Image 1 (cartoon, rainbow, N blue to C red):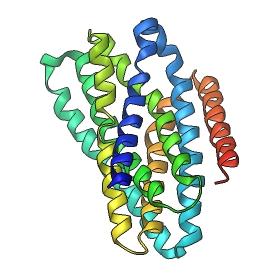
Image 2 (image 1 turned 45 degrees about the vertical axis):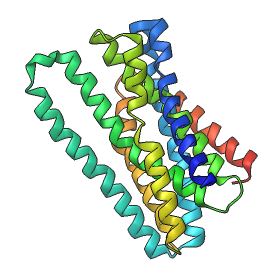
Image 3 (image 1 turned 120 degrees about the vertical axis):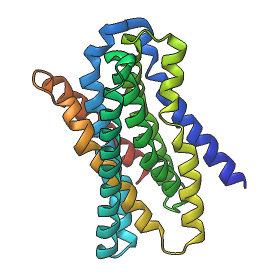
Length: 249
């Protein structure tokens, strides 16, 4: 019970890290948009390295290659299917003219990031269940750090739609609400089902790498913004590699 409570609180801590990403928008306003490509690139580099080092490689160490490959594909498929559901939701929201262009964009961003938080919560719970020293802390820090740029991405369209600072902050936190619940669910599942840890690792890795490939990279590496996005990705990747060395992951 103590482990579950601590994990639940950790999940909420990573969720509130998303709210921190809204803070620069409070002070910089629309100027914060200049940092969005670098921040998104940072999240992409960070998440890609964390998914490979913290999830995929441990899965291959403990599981069969075929089982890991199947779970990895299932995780990637889950993310792609979720994104397609959000695309259809976008089409329905786009027809609601009363929201206005800025309102539709802000709602879509919140919905998409809300879905993205599910594999992130699974990664937290799975890593927490692992007995490998430092791995749980590594994945938790990775999710918390990459949540900050997501908070900025949430706050920018909300500010354009006229939302208050408080609404921007809480909307950013809302996008990560699935994390504590799915973290606890993944932890309980892995604890109860023997041998599920490698499959859970691979599923979370597949979902996170699909998120990087399908959403973060296209959003960051747009024409005219690739230098700042590349710099952000390099910093994010280097940070996670250094953290992996420090924690012995």
